[in-house]
Image (cartoon, rainbow, N blue to C red):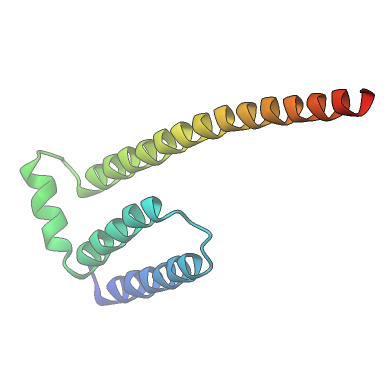
Length: 116
């Protein structure tokens, strides 16, 4: 990997880190997701600065090209994120149904109280 590409990757990762820190500061992201993103950024910094580690690991696992391993890791990470988002969505849907039921009961009780 040439020096220009390394510099570009490091600058890009620094920008992403700043965006992540601003998002954390504004509290727009849950802390359980922050750990995943911080871990990912640390790994990307290591691989950008020392690409030989990535090449060695991909050779160890038998990948013909390092890019194949990178895409597989990216695929698994996206699967993990989508799976966690699906779980959160299901929890929120159940909570919304519960809140709607409670609100309906409160409105009915209020309406029945006015009729008496």
